[in-house]
Image (cartoon, one colour):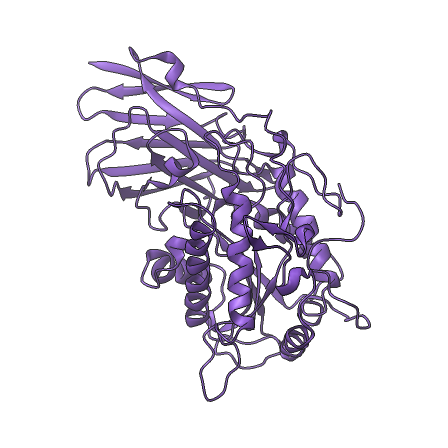
Amino acid sequence: MRKTTRLHCASHSILIVALAAGISDSLHAQGCDGDPGARLDVPATAAPGSIVTVRMQGPAGASGHFMVSLGEGPTPAGHLSLCLDFPLFCDHGFVFDARGHHSFESTINDSPDLIDTVFFAQFVVDGAPPRRSNGASCRITRDGRDSDASVLVPPDCSRTSYGLTPLDELGSGTYLGEEGGLWPGGQVQPPKAHREAGEAIAAALEPLDGSSRPSARGSLVVAGIGFSVSKKIWAEFVPLAQSDGAISPAIRWVDLCLAGEDAIDMSDPNSKYWTKYVPTELAANGVTAAQVQVLWILSGAQRIAGTFPSRARTVQDGVESLIVNAKARFPNAALAYLSPITYEGYAVPVVEPESYENGWAIKWAIETQLAGGLNYRAGVVAAIAPWLTWAYYPWCDGIRPRADGLDWLCVEDTADGVHPTQVGSLKIALRILDQWKRDPTAQPWLLRFVPEKTLPTTSGPAGAMR
């Protein structure tokens, strides 16, 4: 007996053939993720412990990655509720063979009901020319069910702003009793002593070999850490940096972002992220943990119980533990640049103002170090963290432009209203690179030639940038 399942993506409907015995589904994601040159087949069963075989077809020799998860409904949180236990969990890097094929097997680590669950996939193929998907969030239903339930809830593009002031522009003003600004006192620049300490650390960095010895042939590894939003931004940032002639050729840019892993997940030092994913990704990039000296961390968490400020304090605890875990894994990590989440006002169900409030979690984590915690100075007391500062602060109030020109349009999010499109990701990536090129704590390790000393810019590029 054969039953049919129809998987609905934003504007595509993909037919899935299911065998009644075992409920085996084959998901043909061609068209779902917007990459006409690549195909992803995922035969799966609903029984725990059953084998999942993932087969891909694409340009011979091209490299890329994809991620997939199953969850309880078309919500951002649903994407994270269950992941297929792939060798690299939800994110798998691969290279197509000479025939343009790639496949592997894994097991389902839980007992999901495939009916009314969400299939989320992002497929990136770096070929000639490169093709990058924006991901797809699709809800699975079977014939005989309510057809309306099979359509992913679209973003609410009418929620163009929430009337909230970006943290860097709030200054000494307050939000629900908490002072704004990126730094204490509502300031947008770091305290002088902290900035000078960061500059000194940056000036001392040099390429290292795999055993952490200085070497002209070594690498200075800059690692991106975060979840799926971070991964999409990092995927746009790295090509920008690699093609910029002003950037030092000694830098190796490594993507350690993992979809579904937020600051709370990464707070566990024994999680699979730290014990399996990170070592595997470092090895795949031909570098060691000892060569990682700079971290870019865009992280946070959502759907946290409680209200502000308590839930932001929970995220702060996760961010601080993430930082400590990173230092433990990367003993030479000297500098860490932190960012919160982008605007997520279009998401359904509603996410804001929780994403906005994530900015305070980052602010408070940095202030912990300013107050003497998260020690970064090696000495009598061992350093447990890198020196901390802000990366580009990417939150704006929807279509209301910030002083630096940043705004966020509904079309700059994918169908879930949470993940930025390639255009949206590039928008943030350009600002990160621009800020770093002008930041005196980044210039010594980032640039081929360090310009004369300038004042740092932590809130974003000067003037409008669209």
